Length: 295
Ligand SMILES: [Zn+2]
Ligand SMILES: [Zn+2]
Ligand SMILES: [Zn+2]
Ligand SMILES: [Zn+2]
Image (tube, rainbow, N blue to C red):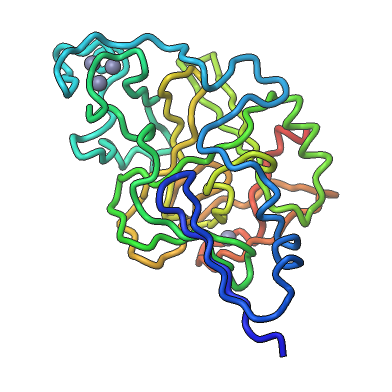
């Protein structure tokens, strides 16, 4: 007698959330509570969480002094120092790099640069350019799908949340119940042979559309740390291949992007691991686990 309950959240632009509910019956509130969707703070950008010494919204990188609309590699200090990451239409150059598990850091023009907002070295900072929809999947809870085609190498969305320290990530990971869905993403960047920069982003309490993305062992998005105004990277997700309208968007929670069969997960005796329902041929049956956080 309760009829059908259909919930759709559509993201037109990052942060502008249109909610459509078609329902008959009175289970709506319980439904929302059950999925916990409306009890988070929506933020398009990373925010400083416990143990984060640099505020991610502070401008901590130098800018260029280009006076033309578009920065050019022969005259722009940003492009000369950090290299050119995008084609003029915003597509990533060197999209094949992720297959090798190796990528150069990306730095965009920032608030201190004198170039225009349309400079081709500004991509992730412009936010969502494709209409995305949060929907309820059959076996994985919430998921995100695209409502339009996305071509390979284009920016899709960020995985934003609280930037926390390693100690806080560890504390939260241990306090987590297995039925909790959210994922602390740990990004490790190697500079040269010795120095490693680690960034931990937790979207459990503060997050954007990225928090609804599911893991897949054969994902169609891959994650790349991109720096805009701050030394703290944004976790940007790009299309790893051409993606059709209505396809679910997924990424590899361990940060990889590969069409090769995944390696057998290391032994995790005594740990409760969540099963993976991605349905890919190379599925490892469990969601990735960052053992360094747990050790
Ligand atoms: Zn520029
Ligand atoms: Zn410039
Ligand atoms: Zn610049
Ligand atoms: Zn899987």
